[in-house]
Structures are given as C-alpha cells and as structure tokens.
Length: 190
Image (tube, rainbow, N blue to C red; front, side, top):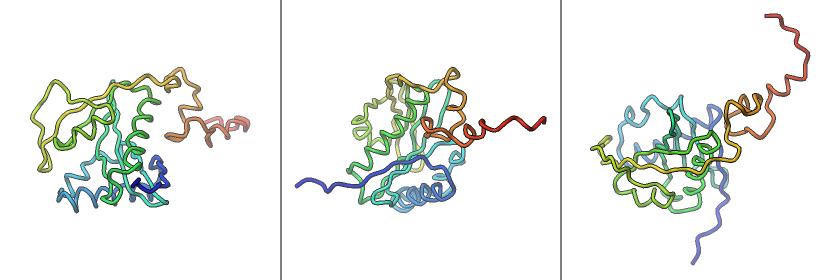
C-alpha cells in the first residue's frame, strides 16, 4: 500500500509568525520527545540563521536551520513531527536547504548527525568525516558529516546583479521592493 499524497510546501522563515512555527516544531521534537533542555535547544544561533519550514496542508510539520561560514554551510536542527517522518515532507525540507546553499555558492555542507541517524543523512549524499572528534551534547552522541554540492549555474556572487543581492532571502528571481523604488528619481541629498 502506498503512502498518501501530501500537499507539501517549503518556505524560508521571513517573519515573526514563521519563527514561532519553527520554534514550535523544534520544541515538540527536541524538548518534548528528546527531553532537550530549553537553553540547549535555543542556543543563541536562531537569529543569525536561515530557517526552512515544511508545511503539509498549510500546517508546519518540519524545519531545518542553515548557518553560513567561510567555505561551507552547516545544516542543523532538522526537526520533523512524528506523523510526518518518512514522508515527502522530510525530503522536501532537506532538499530545499541544500538548494539554498547551492544558490548562495556553497559547494560544501557540514552537519552533526546523531549517531543513530547517519544512515538517514547518507540518503542525501552526506558521509561521515574522516576526522572524528568525540562529539556529545544534549545527551546524544553525534558524528560529523559532510557533503559536496555541485556548483549552481546561477550562484549568487559579487558579480551578480546588485538588485538580486538585495532581494528577500530565497526570492532572488523575483524583483523586490527596493528594485521597484529605483524607478523614482533621486531626491534625497543625504
């Protein structure tokens, strides 16, 4: 028997309501299911990261966080509500995150996988890193994982259209509000 078709959509969190949805999914998975303390789950990195939310029938069911470093991006905090694990939603959220990394020009993605979930990440092309440091936090053993990405044909660089660079995160192919303002004459001498 095949799994039912899910109406799946992914977005980049871009407002306070989206961030609340991210936090709600993570709290349900990490704090409730895995008994992770609040101060460890909400570690001070949420407001300097990109968050992807996966929706099913308009309801948030999965999230992932991306942080950016010199030469690599880091995927972290993948949380999927129980009833959506093993569905197209999980794949959609991870693939959306990887595509954002590619579009931003990253060719290497790093992560920390719970030791029991390395096989899951291998389905997305990740491999355990040769350098294996002992990595334990929030009562779980972790493995450093890495994946090489194919260079995006239209990666955003300093040579990209400057209007593209100032468009909202993830909406790089849609003219933004600042672009629209460029049609007005320059009137401010300050």
